[in-house]
Length: 193
Ligand SMILES: Nc1nc2c(ncn2[C@@H]2O[C@H](COP(=O)(O)OP(=O)(O)OP(=O)(O)O)[C@@H](O)[C@H]2O)c(=O)[nH]1
Ligand SMILES: [Mg+2]
Image (tube, rainbow, N blue to C red; front, side):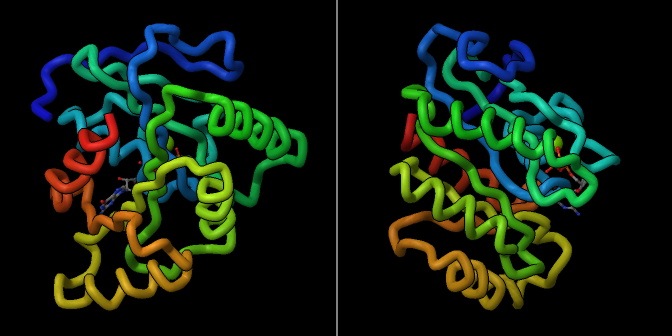
């Protein structure tokens, strides 16, 4: 998709705050600092529309970005950041559950992992959660610019094995820095609109 028009609609926590225009939504999920906001920025061709945090664990709300009046990207706070209080973690869990499980417009979750490392236990839990609730998932292995191309296949295999991914679920090698995987990611999104 060629993106000209992007609108930050708002930062929301509760379902009654979410947009009501019925456009398809694509939410990001992943460890804090893995590159979720950077993924959105690359996909929409804006350097700093979605906030890139220097400090992990900062996005505490669901940020809705309306793209070309056709879909939303929803930036979701990351998980796995150690310095988060118990009550913050519980609030996060409730917000995610309410949004992921109850949202008809949610067409897929883009689960971002770091291509350099095996997915964490939290990544596996998120993947299992999405599968359990039949939410389509697109796995994106980002920061591919940080390892040589010759190693991508091996790392992809590790990601697939560790997450125990279904064969039919896509796994895209990506780099927000270099734009690797951009076309493929848009193709997977557009196929689910
Ligand atoms: N080299 C490289 N760096 C990246 C890439 N994607 C993200 N980064 C860097 O990783 C850091 C975290 O990126 P964010 O996009 O803020 O990560 P996030 O997942 O949104 O983080 P939270 O909102 O805190 O959960 C930033 O310093 C980015 O510049 C990539 O593809 N390549
Ligand atoms: Mg972010």
